Length: 564
DNA sequence: ATGTGC
Image (cartoon, rainbow, N blue to C red; front, side, top):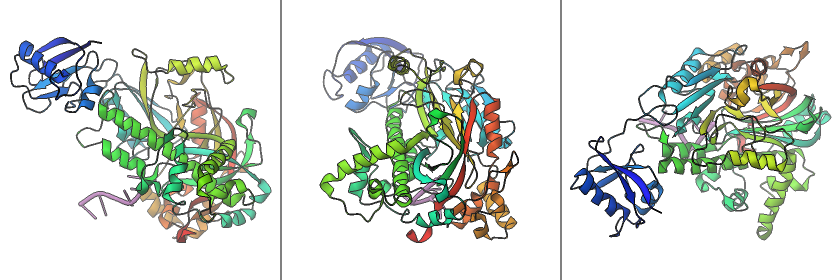
Protein backbone atom coordinates (compact mmCIF):
# COMPACT_ATOMS: atom_id res chain seq x y z
CA UNK A 1 0.00 0.00 0.00
CA UNK A 2 1.35 3.48 -0.81
CA UNK A 3 2.35 5.61 2.19
CA UNK A 4 1.74 9.33 2.48
CA UNK A 5 4.54 11.17 4.25
CA UNK A 6 5.90 14.69 4.61
CA UNK A 7 9.52 15.49 3.98
CA UNK A 8 11.08 18.64 5.34
CA UNK A 9 14.46 20.36 5.35
CA UNK A 10 15.93 19.63 8.77
CA UNK A 11 17.80 22.95 8.76
CA UNK A 12 14.83 24.96 7.53
CA UNK A 13 11.60 23.27 8.43
CA UNK A 14 9.30 25.71 6.67
CA UNK A 15 10.43 23.93 3.48
CA UNK A 16 8.39 20.81 3.10
CA UNK A 17 6.61 18.60 0.63
CA UNK A 18 4.07 15.81 0.76
CA UNK A 19 5.07 12.52 -0.85
CA UNK A 20 3.15 9.44 -1.80
CA UNK A 21 5.61 6.58 -1.62
CA UNK A 22 4.94 3.45 -3.64
CA UNK A 23 5.84 0.07 -2.21
CA UNK A 24 9.62 -0.07 -1.93
CA UNK A 25 12.37 -1.86 -0.09
CA UNK A 26 12.94 -1.21 3.61
CA UNK A 27 16.61 -2.11 3.22
CA UNK A 28 18.32 1.29 3.01
CA UNK A 29 21.13 -0.23 0.94
CA UNK A 30 18.81 -1.55 -1.76
CA UNK A 31 18.62 0.47 -5.00
CA UNK A 32 14.79 0.51 -4.83
CA UNK A 33 14.69 1.50 -1.16
CA UNK A 34 12.39 3.98 0.58
CA UNK A 35 15.59 5.78 1.52
CA UNK A 36 16.51 6.23 -2.14
CA UNK A 37 13.00 7.49 -2.95
CA UNK A 38 13.06 9.99 -0.09
CA UNK A 39 16.52 11.29 -0.99
CA UNK A 40 15.55 11.70 -4.62
CA UNK A 41 12.40 13.62 -3.66
CA UNK A 42 14.47 15.78 -1.32
CA UNK A 43 16.67 16.74 -4.24
CA UNK A 44 13.78 17.43 -6.61
CA UNK A 45 11.29 19.08 -4.28
CA UNK A 46 13.45 20.62 -1.56
CA UNK A 47 16.60 21.25 -3.57
CA UNK A 48 18.73 19.38 -1.05
CA UNK A 49 21.53 17.94 -3.13
CA UNK A 50 23.84 16.26 -0.71
CA UNK A 51 21.37 14.84 1.80
CA UNK A 52 22.97 12.20 3.97
CA UNK A 53 20.86 11.76 7.08
CA UNK A 54 17.16 11.31 7.69
CA UNK A 55 15.41 11.93 10.99
CA UNK A 56 11.86 11.29 12.18
CA UNK A 57 10.08 14.53 13.02
CA UNK A 58 9.11 14.85 16.68
CA UNK A 59 11.28 12.05 17.99
CA UNK A 60 14.46 13.01 16.17
CA UNK A 61 15.25 9.39 15.61
CA UNK A 62 17.72 8.83 12.82
CA UNK A 63 16.78 6.25 10.21
CA UNK A 64 19.71 3.98 9.52
CA UNK A 65 18.72 0.35 9.77
CA UNK A 66 16.00 -1.59 8.03
CA UNK A 67 14.21 -2.02 11.36
CA UNK A 68 14.23 1.70 11.99
CA UNK A 69 12.71 2.33 8.58
CA UNK A 70 10.14 -0.35 9.22
CA UNK A 71 8.96 1.14 12.49
CA UNK A 72 9.02 4.75 11.29
CA UNK A 73 7.19 4.46 8.00
CA UNK A 74 3.54 5.23 8.36
CA UNK A 75 1.04 7.69 6.99
CA UNK A 76 1.58 11.31 7.99
CA UNK A 77 5.02 10.84 9.45
CA UNK A 78 7.38 13.76 8.84
CA UNK A 79 10.94 12.93 7.78
CA UNK A 80 13.59 15.59 8.21
CA UNK A 81 16.32 15.63 5.61
CA UNK A 82 19.78 16.63 6.77
CA UNK A 83 22.98 17.41 4.90
CA UNK A 84 24.87 15.96 7.82
CA UNK A 85 23.90 18.34 10.60
CA UNK A 86 22.25 17.09 13.78
CA UNK A 87 18.48 16.84 14.20
CA UNK A 88 16.76 20.16 14.73
CA UNK A 89 13.79 19.72 17.09
CA UNK A 90 10.44 20.60 15.63
CA UNK A 91 8.36 22.97 17.71
CA UNK A 92 4.72 22.34 17.24
CA UNK A 93 1.65 21.73 19.34
CA UNK A 94 0.88 18.14 20.25
CA UNK A 95 -2.45 17.22 18.73
CA UNK A 96 -4.49 16.90 21.92
CA UNK A 97 -3.54 18.62 25.13
CA UNK A 98 -0.09 19.25 26.35
CA UNK A 99 2.69 20.85 24.45
CA UNK A 100 6.13 20.26 23.16
CA UNK A 101 9.30 20.58 25.21
CA UNK A 102 9.65 23.78 27.10
CA UNK A 103 6.13 25.06 26.60
CA UNK A 104 4.07 24.93 29.81
CA UNK A 105 0.82 22.95 29.92
CA UNK A 106 -1.33 25.70 31.33
CA UNK A 107 -4.46 23.62 30.86
CA UNK A 108 -3.29 20.47 32.69
CA UNK A 109 -5.76 19.93 35.53
CA UNK A 110 -4.40 19.22 39.01
CA UNK A 111 -6.42 17.51 41.75
CA UNK A 112 -5.04 17.06 45.24
CA UNK A 113 -7.28 14.63 47.11
CA UNK A 114 -5.89 15.28 50.60
CA UNK A 115 -7.76 16.99 53.45
CA UNK A 116 -7.44 15.11 56.73
CA UNK A 117 -4.12 13.62 55.70
CA UNK A 118 -1.19 15.96 56.07
CA UNK A 119 0.58 16.89 52.86
CA UNK A 120 4.03 18.41 52.56
CA UNK A 121 3.79 21.54 50.40
CA UNK A 122 6.89 20.41 48.50
CA UNK A 123 4.98 17.42 47.14
CA UNK A 124 2.14 19.66 45.95
CA UNK A 125 4.71 21.85 44.21
CA UNK A 126 6.19 18.75 42.64
CA UNK A 127 2.77 17.71 41.27
CA UNK A 128 2.12 21.19 39.89
CA UNK A 129 5.56 21.65 38.40
CA UNK A 130 5.43 18.24 36.77
CA UNK A 131 1.95 18.93 35.41
CA UNK A 132 3.08 22.18 33.81
CA UNK A 133 6.47 21.24 32.49
CA UNK A 134 6.42 17.69 31.15
CA UNK A 135 5.18 17.49 27.57
CA UNK A 136 1.75 16.02 26.90
CA UNK A 137 0.40 16.11 30.46
CA UNK A 138 -3.35 16.66 30.62
CA UNK A 139 -4.31 15.63 34.17
CA UNK A 140 -2.47 15.19 37.47
CA UNK A 141 -3.76 13.78 40.75
CA UNK A 142 -2.18 13.82 44.19
CA UNK A 143 -3.61 11.02 46.35
CA UNK A 144 -3.96 11.60 50.11
CA UNK A 145 -0.74 9.63 50.68
CA UNK A 146 1.11 12.17 48.52
CA UNK A 147 4.65 12.93 49.69
CA UNK A 148 7.81 14.36 48.16
CA UNK A 149 10.16 12.31 46.04
CA UNK A 150 13.64 13.26 44.89
CA UNK A 151 12.29 15.07 41.86
CA UNK A 152 8.80 13.73 41.23
CA UNK A 153 6.17 13.13 43.91
CA UNK A 154 5.04 9.78 45.31
CA UNK A 155 1.35 8.98 45.69
CA UNK A 156 0.62 10.68 42.39
CA UNK A 157 -0.92 9.92 39.01
CA UNK A 158 -0.03 11.69 35.77
CA UNK A 159 -2.12 11.32 32.62
CA UNK A 160 -0.50 12.25 29.31
CA UNK A 161 -1.20 12.21 25.61
CA UNK A 162 1.45 11.44 23.04
CA UNK A 163 4.24 11.10 25.58
CA UNK A 164 5.64 8.52 27.98
CA UNK A 165 7.69 9.68 30.96
CA UNK A 166 9.66 6.79 32.50
CA UNK A 167 11.06 8.88 35.39
CA UNK A 168 7.53 9.54 36.65
CA UNK A 169 7.13 5.92 37.68
CA UNK A 170 10.74 5.56 38.75
CA UNK A 171 13.00 2.57 38.97
CA UNK A 172 10.83 0.12 40.84
CA UNK A 173 8.71 -0.71 37.80
CA UNK A 174 5.93 -3.14 38.65
CA UNK A 175 6.09 -2.62 42.39
CA UNK A 176 2.77 -3.45 43.99
CA UNK A 177 0.77 -5.35 46.58
CA UNK A 178 -0.65 -8.86 46.59
CA UNK A 179 -2.93 -10.41 49.21
CA UNK A 180 -3.06 -14.17 49.79
CA UNK A 181 -5.30 -16.27 52.04
CA UNK A 182 -3.63 -18.69 54.42
CA UNK A 183 -5.07 -21.71 56.20
CA UNK A 184 -4.01 -20.45 59.59
CA UNK A 185 -6.62 -19.32 62.06
CA UNK A 186 -6.29 -16.33 64.32
CA UNK A 187 -5.59 -18.43 67.39
CA UNK A 188 -2.32 -19.43 65.76
CA UNK A 189 -1.15 -15.86 65.24
CA UNK A 190 -2.76 -13.76 67.99
CA UNK A 191 -0.85 -12.61 71.06
CA UNK A 192 2.25 -14.54 72.05
CA UNK A 193 1.60 -17.07 69.27
CA UNK A 194 2.81 -14.42 66.89
CA UNK A 195 6.32 -14.90 68.23
CA UNK A 196 6.22 -18.59 67.30
CA UNK A 197 5.01 -17.73 63.83
CA UNK A 198 7.78 -15.17 63.48
CA UNK A 199 10.30 -17.85 64.49
CA UNK A 200 9.02 -20.10 61.71
CA UNK A 201 9.80 -17.48 59.09
CA UNK A 202 13.29 -18.67 58.16
CA UNK A 203 15.19 -19.33 54.98
CA UNK A 204 13.49 -16.41 53.25
CA UNK A 205 16.58 -14.36 52.51
CA UNK A 206 18.90 -14.85 49.59
CA UNK A 207 18.47 -16.50 46.25
CA UNK A 208 15.73 -19.00 45.60
CA UNK A 209 17.07 -22.21 44.00
CA UNK A 210 19.01 -22.22 40.71
CA UNK A 211 18.87 -19.87 37.76
CA UNK A 212 17.42 -22.67 35.68
CA UNK A 213 14.58 -23.10 38.18
CA UNK A 214 14.05 -19.34 38.46
CA UNK A 215 13.66 -19.14 34.70
CA UNK A 216 10.91 -21.75 34.86
CA UNK A 217 9.17 -19.69 37.52
CA UNK A 218 9.49 -16.68 35.21
CA UNK A 219 7.75 -18.43 32.33
CA UNK A 220 4.02 -18.54 31.83
CA UNK A 221 2.80 -20.64 28.94
CA UNK A 222 3.92 -18.68 25.92
CA UNK A 223 5.68 -15.84 27.70
CA UNK A 224 8.92 -15.79 29.61
CA UNK A 225 10.28 -12.80 31.43
CA UNK A 226 13.62 -13.73 32.86
CA UNK A 227 15.78 -10.66 33.32
CA UNK A 228 19.00 -12.64 33.09
CA UNK A 229 20.99 -14.29 35.88
CA UNK A 230 22.16 -11.01 37.46
CA UNK A 231 18.69 -9.70 38.19
CA UNK A 232 16.89 -13.03 38.53
CA UNK A 233 19.10 -13.85 41.52
CA UNK A 234 16.88 -11.50 43.55
CA UNK A 235 13.68 -13.29 42.57
CA UNK A 236 11.66 -14.24 45.63
CA UNK A 237 13.24 -11.63 47.91
CA UNK A 238 11.36 -8.74 49.45
CA UNK A 239 13.99 -6.00 49.18
CA UNK A 240 14.40 -2.98 51.41
CA UNK A 241 12.79 0.41 51.90
CA UNK A 242 9.05 0.19 52.47
CA UNK A 243 8.79 -3.37 51.15
CA UNK A 244 7.47 -6.04 53.49
CA UNK A 245 5.46 -9.22 53.88
CA UNK A 246 2.90 -9.18 56.66
CA UNK A 247 0.67 -11.75 58.32
CA UNK A 248 -2.65 -10.18 59.20
CA UNK A 249 -5.99 -11.13 60.74
CA UNK A 250 -9.16 -9.96 59.04
CA UNK A 251 -11.05 -8.07 61.74
CA UNK A 252 -13.93 -6.90 59.66
CA UNK A 253 -15.01 -7.49 56.08
CA UNK A 254 -18.43 -6.32 55.05
CA UNK A 255 -18.51 -7.42 51.46
CA UNK A 256 -19.08 -11.05 50.61
CA UNK A 257 -17.49 -10.79 47.19
CA UNK A 258 -14.11 -9.94 48.68
CA UNK A 259 -13.80 -13.61 49.59
CA UNK A 260 -12.45 -12.65 52.99
CA UNK A 261 -14.18 -13.29 56.31
CA UNK A 262 -13.47 -11.99 59.80
CA UNK A 263 -10.77 -14.03 61.56
CA UNK A 264 -9.21 -15.17 58.29
CA UNK A 265 -5.42 -14.98 58.33
CA UNK A 266 -3.95 -13.37 55.24
CA UNK A 267 -0.52 -12.56 53.86
CA UNK A 268 0.11 -9.15 52.32
CA UNK A 269 3.21 -8.91 50.09
CA UNK A 270 4.59 -5.53 49.01
CA UNK A 271 7.52 -5.81 46.63
CA UNK A 272 8.64 -4.94 43.14
CA UNK A 273 11.13 -5.71 40.40
CA UNK A 274 14.24 -5.31 42.63
CA UNK A 275 17.27 -4.24 40.59
CA UNK A 276 15.74 -5.12 37.24
CA UNK A 277 13.28 -2.24 36.92
CA UNK A 278 15.92 0.27 37.89
CA UNK A 279 18.15 -1.06 35.18
CA UNK A 280 15.34 -0.67 32.63
CA UNK A 281 14.84 2.95 33.66
CA UNK A 282 18.56 3.60 33.38
CA UNK A 283 18.62 2.32 29.81
CA UNK A 284 15.79 4.54 28.63
CA UNK A 285 16.41 7.90 30.21
CA UNK A 286 19.19 10.34 29.65
CA UNK A 287 19.65 13.77 31.17
CA UNK A 288 18.76 15.36 27.86
CA UNK A 289 15.54 13.46 27.20
CA UNK A 290 13.60 12.22 30.21
CA UNK A 291 10.49 11.84 28.05
CA UNK A 292 9.67 9.70 25.05
CA UNK A 293 7.32 10.42 22.18
CA UNK A 294 4.85 7.59 22.01
CA UNK A 295 5.69 6.78 18.40
CA UNK A 296 9.45 6.67 18.98
CA UNK A 297 11.04 3.26 18.69
CA UNK A 298 12.62 3.91 22.07
CA UNK A 299 9.18 4.40 23.62
CA UNK A 300 7.94 1.10 22.26
CA UNK A 301 11.06 -0.69 23.44
CA UNK A 302 10.66 0.89 26.86
CA UNK A 303 7.06 -0.26 27.09
CA UNK A 304 8.10 -3.80 26.23
CA UNK A 305 10.79 -3.81 28.91
CA UNK A 306 8.40 -2.11 31.32
CA UNK A 307 5.81 -4.82 30.80
CA UNK A 308 8.45 -7.48 31.37
CA UNK A 309 9.50 -5.81 34.61
CA UNK A 310 5.84 -5.67 35.70
CA UNK A 311 5.44 -9.38 35.07
CA UNK A 312 8.75 -10.07 36.79
CA UNK A 313 7.56 -8.12 39.84
CA UNK A 314 4.28 -10.03 39.95
CA UNK A 315 6.13 -13.35 39.72
CA UNK A 316 8.37 -12.07 42.50
CA UNK A 317 5.39 -11.42 44.79
CA UNK A 318 4.05 -14.88 44.06
CA UNK A 319 7.38 -16.46 44.87
CA UNK A 320 7.70 -14.49 48.09
CA UNK A 321 4.21 -15.71 49.03
CA UNK A 322 5.20 -19.28 48.20
CA UNK A 323 8.31 -19.08 50.37
CA UNK A 324 6.26 -17.66 53.25
CA UNK A 325 3.51 -20.26 52.84
CA UNK A 326 6.10 -23.05 52.96
CA UNK A 327 7.03 -21.75 56.42
CA UNK A 328 3.49 -20.99 57.56
CA UNK A 329 1.87 -24.22 56.35
CA UNK A 330 4.69 -26.75 56.65
CA UNK A 331 2.28 -29.67 56.37
CA UNK A 332 1.14 -28.61 52.91
CA UNK A 333 3.19 -30.46 50.33
CA UNK A 334 1.87 -27.96 47.81
CA UNK A 335 4.37 -25.39 49.03
CA UNK A 336 7.42 -27.68 48.99
CA UNK A 337 8.81 -25.72 46.09
CA UNK A 338 9.10 -22.71 48.37
CA UNK A 339 12.01 -24.34 50.19
CA UNK A 340 15.46 -24.39 48.70
CA UNK A 341 16.33 -27.72 50.23
CA UNK A 342 13.87 -30.10 48.61
CA UNK A 343 15.37 -31.97 45.70
CA UNK A 344 13.21 -31.83 42.63
CA UNK A 345 13.10 -34.17 39.68
CA UNK A 346 14.08 -31.76 36.94
CA UNK A 347 12.05 -33.46 34.24
CA UNK A 348 8.86 -32.76 36.19
CA UNK A 349 9.89 -29.31 37.31
CA UNK A 350 7.82 -27.43 34.74
CA UNK A 351 4.70 -29.28 35.76
CA UNK A 352 5.42 -28.84 39.43
CA UNK A 353 5.77 -25.08 38.94
CA UNK A 354 2.51 -24.96 36.98
CA UNK A 355 0.68 -26.90 39.72
CA UNK A 356 2.13 -24.73 42.45
CA UNK A 357 1.18 -21.53 40.64
CA UNK A 358 -2.37 -22.80 40.18
CA UNK A 359 -2.61 -23.48 43.93
CA UNK A 360 -1.23 -20.05 44.65
CA UNK A 361 -3.83 -18.46 42.37
CA UNK A 362 -6.55 -20.08 44.47
CA UNK A 363 -5.14 -18.27 47.47
CA UNK A 364 -4.70 -14.89 45.82
CA UNK A 365 -7.26 -12.25 46.70
CA UNK A 366 -5.87 -9.39 44.65
CA UNK A 367 -2.58 -8.30 43.10
CA UNK A 368 -2.02 -4.77 41.80
CA UNK A 369 0.82 -2.69 40.40
CA UNK A 370 1.18 0.77 41.88
CA UNK A 371 4.30 1.82 39.95
CA UNK A 372 3.58 1.54 36.24
CA UNK A 373 2.41 3.27 33.10
CA UNK A 374 -0.56 2.00 31.13
CA UNK A 375 -2.14 3.02 27.87
CA UNK A 376 -5.85 3.18 28.53
CA UNK A 377 -9.05 4.63 27.22
CA UNK A 378 -9.32 8.20 28.40
CA UNK A 379 -11.43 9.92 29.61
CA UNK A 380 -12.98 7.08 31.63
CA UNK A 381 -16.39 5.75 30.81
CA UNK A 382 -18.95 4.34 33.25
CA UNK A 383 -17.65 0.89 34.21
CA UNK A 384 -19.67 -2.24 33.57
CA UNK A 385 -21.47 -3.70 36.55
CA UNK A 386 -19.45 -6.03 38.77
CA UNK A 387 -21.51 -8.94 37.45
CA UNK A 388 -21.06 -8.17 33.79
CA UNK A 389 -21.89 -10.60 31.07
CA UNK A 390 -18.93 -11.85 29.02
CA UNK A 391 -20.23 -9.75 26.14
CA UNK A 392 -20.11 -6.59 28.22
CA UNK A 393 -16.59 -7.35 29.31
CA UNK A 394 -15.58 -8.06 25.73
CA UNK A 395 -17.13 -4.77 24.69
CA UNK A 396 -15.34 -2.95 27.44
CA UNK A 397 -12.06 -4.58 26.51
CA UNK A 398 -12.72 -3.72 22.89
CA UNK A 399 -13.22 -0.12 23.87
CA UNK A 400 -9.67 -0.13 25.16
CA UNK A 401 -8.25 -1.39 21.93
CA UNK A 402 -5.70 0.92 20.46
CA UNK A 403 -7.48 1.73 17.24
CA UNK A 404 -6.42 4.86 15.46
CA UNK A 405 -8.64 7.68 16.57
CA UNK A 406 -9.65 6.04 19.84
CA UNK A 407 -9.42 8.39 22.79
CA UNK A 408 -6.57 7.09 24.87
CA UNK A 409 -3.91 8.32 27.23
CA UNK A 410 -0.97 7.11 29.28
CA UNK A 411 -1.65 6.82 32.98
CA UNK A 412 1.59 7.02 34.98
CA UNK A 413 1.23 5.76 38.53
CA UNK A 414 3.89 6.39 41.13
CA UNK A 415 2.66 4.94 44.40
CA UNK A 416 -0.97 4.86 43.32
CA UNK A 417 -3.20 1.80 43.04
CA UNK A 418 -5.52 1.28 40.08
CA UNK A 419 -9.28 1.07 40.61
CA UNK A 420 -9.74 -1.65 38.02
CA UNK A 421 -8.20 -4.92 36.91
CA UNK A 422 -6.03 -4.05 33.89
CA UNK A 423 -6.74 -7.44 32.30
CA UNK A 424 -10.54 -7.25 32.36
CA UNK A 425 -11.08 -3.53 33.02
CA UNK A 426 -13.60 -4.54 35.65
CA UNK A 427 -13.62 -2.49 38.84
CA UNK A 428 -11.64 -4.10 41.64
CA UNK A 429 -13.80 -5.30 44.52
CA UNK A 430 -11.09 -5.04 47.16
CA UNK A 431 -7.77 -3.24 47.60
CA UNK A 432 -5.36 -3.11 50.52
CA UNK A 433 -4.47 0.26 52.04
CA UNK A 434 -1.65 -0.67 54.42
CA UNK A 435 -0.77 1.76 57.17
CA UNK A 436 2.88 1.10 57.77
CA UNK A 437 4.85 -1.71 59.34
CA UNK A 438 2.73 -2.99 62.20
CA UNK A 439 -0.28 -0.71 61.76
CA UNK A 440 -3.68 -1.68 60.32
CA UNK A 441 -4.40 -2.32 56.69
CA UNK A 442 -7.71 -0.89 55.56
CA UNK A 443 -9.78 -2.71 52.93
CA UNK A 444 -10.97 -0.38 50.22
CA UNK A 445 -13.46 -0.77 47.45
CA UNK A 446 -13.24 1.73 44.60
CA UNK A 447 -16.38 3.76 43.92
CA UNK A 448 -17.34 4.90 40.43
CA UNK A 449 -19.99 7.55 40.02
CA UNK A 450 -21.07 10.41 37.89
CA UNK A 451 -19.85 12.76 40.62
CA UNK A 452 -16.25 11.69 40.00
CA UNK A 453 -16.79 11.38 36.25
CA UNK A 454 -16.32 7.66 36.68
CA UNK A 455 -12.75 7.93 37.78
CA UNK A 456 -11.59 11.09 36.02
CA UNK A 457 -11.30 12.94 39.33
CA UNK A 458 -8.93 10.36 40.87
CA UNK A 459 -7.35 9.32 37.56
CA UNK A 460 -8.77 5.81 38.07
CA UNK A 461 -6.50 5.42 41.07
CA UNK A 462 -6.38 5.31 44.86
CA UNK A 463 -3.75 5.82 47.54
CA UNK A 464 -1.37 2.89 47.89
CA UNK A 465 -0.73 3.25 51.61
CA UNK A 466 -0.40 5.75 54.39
CA UNK A 467 2.42 7.64 52.72
CA UNK A 468 5.46 9.02 54.46
CA UNK A 469 4.93 11.94 56.83
CA UNK A 470 8.66 12.29 57.46
CA UNK A 471 11.67 11.92 55.20
CA UNK A 472 13.91 8.92 55.74
CA UNK A 473 16.73 11.10 57.02
CA UNK A 474 14.49 12.89 59.47
CA UNK A 475 13.00 9.63 60.72
CA UNK A 476 16.45 8.14 61.10
CA UNK A 477 17.61 10.84 63.50
CA UNK A 478 14.46 11.97 65.28
CA UNK A 479 12.81 8.62 65.96
CA UNK A 480 16.14 7.08 66.89
CA UNK A 481 16.53 9.86 69.47
CA UNK A 482 12.99 9.50 70.74
CA UNK A 483 13.58 5.84 71.62
CA UNK A 484 17.16 6.47 72.73
CA UNK A 485 18.44 4.10 70.07
CA UNK A 486 16.59 1.13 71.59
CA UNK A 487 15.51 -0.37 68.27
CA UNK A 488 14.45 -3.68 69.81
CA UNK A 489 11.64 -1.97 71.72
CA UNK A 490 9.98 -0.89 68.47
CA UNK A 491 9.77 -4.44 67.25
CA UNK A 492 7.81 -5.87 70.17
CA UNK A 493 4.04 -6.27 70.21
CA UNK A 494 3.71 -3.71 72.98
CA UNK A 495 5.75 -1.05 71.18
CA UNK A 496 4.34 2.35 72.03
CA UNK A 497 4.84 3.42 68.43
CA UNK A 498 2.19 0.93 67.42
CA UNK A 499 -0.46 2.04 69.87
CA UNK A 500 -3.37 3.82 68.29
CA UNK A 501 -6.96 4.09 69.44
CA UNK A 502 -9.74 4.30 66.89
CA UNK A 503 -13.39 4.41 67.97
CA UNK A 504 -12.41 3.55 71.52
CA UNK A 505 -10.57 0.43 70.42
CA UNK A 506 -6.85 -0.12 70.23
CA UNK A 507 -6.51 -1.07 66.61
CA UNK A 508 -2.76 -1.32 66.61
CA UNK A 509 -0.26 -3.09 68.75
CA UNK A 510 0.31 -6.76 69.13
CA UNK A 511 2.58 -7.00 66.12
CA UNK A 512 5.88 -8.84 66.03
CA UNK A 513 8.24 -7.12 63.64
CA UNK A 514 11.22 -8.86 62.07
CA UNK A 515 13.66 -6.17 61.01
CA UNK A 516 17.36 -6.74 61.51
CA UNK A 517 18.34 -3.64 59.56
CA UNK A 518 18.68 -0.93 62.18
CA UNK A 519 18.21 2.03 59.88
CA UNK A 520 14.98 0.55 58.57
CA UNK A 521 13.63 0.27 62.11
CA UNK A 522 13.69 4.05 62.37
CA UNK A 523 12.97 4.91 58.75
CA UNK A 524 9.91 2.68 58.62
CA UNK A 525 8.59 3.40 62.12
CA UNK A 526 4.84 4.10 62.20
CA UNK A 527 5.57 7.64 63.39
CA UNK A 528 7.30 8.31 60.07
CA UNK A 529 4.01 7.65 58.25
CA UNK A 530 0.73 9.47 57.96
CA UNK A 531 -2.35 8.19 59.73
CA UNK A 532 -3.85 5.59 57.42
CA UNK A 533 -7.33 6.40 58.74
CA UNK A 534 -6.94 9.98 57.57
CA UNK A 535 -5.89 8.76 54.13
CA UNK A 536 -8.93 6.46 53.91
CA UNK A 537 -11.21 9.23 55.18
CA UNK A 538 -10.03 11.52 52.38
CA UNK A 539 -10.71 8.90 49.72
CA UNK A 540 -14.20 8.33 51.12
CA UNK A 541 -14.87 12.06 51.33
CA UNK A 542 -13.80 12.50 47.73
CA UNK A 543 -16.29 9.80 46.78
CA UNK A 544 -13.69 7.56 45.16
CA UNK A 545 -13.62 4.66 47.63
CA UNK A 546 -15.46 3.07 50.51
CA UNK A 547 -14.04 1.27 53.52
CA UNK A 548 -15.20 -2.34 53.60
CA UNK A 549 -13.11 -3.71 56.45
CA UNK A 550 -9.69 -3.80 58.01
CA UNK A 551 -6.92 -6.18 59.00
CA UNK A 552 -4.81 -6.30 62.12
CA UNK A 553 -1.13 -6.99 61.52
CA UNK A 554 0.32 -9.84 63.56
CA UNK A 555 3.77 -10.53 62.15
CA UNK A 556 5.49 -8.00 59.94
CA UNK A 557 8.55 -9.26 58.11
CA UNK A 558 11.08 -6.81 56.71
CA UNK A 559 14.49 -8.43 56.74
CA UNK A 560 16.37 -11.02 58.72
CA UNK A 561 20.15 -11.05 59.02
CA UNK A 562 22.44 -14.02 58.96
CA UNK A 563 20.73 -15.49 55.94
CA UNK A 564 18.38 -17.56 58.07
C1' DA B 1 14.34 1.42 45.89
C1' DT B 2 18.83 0.11 44.61
C1' DG B 3 24.20 -6.31 43.05
C1' DT B 4 23.06 2.23 45.56
C1' DG B 5 27.06 7.36 43.88
C1' DC B 6 31.70 9.68 43.93
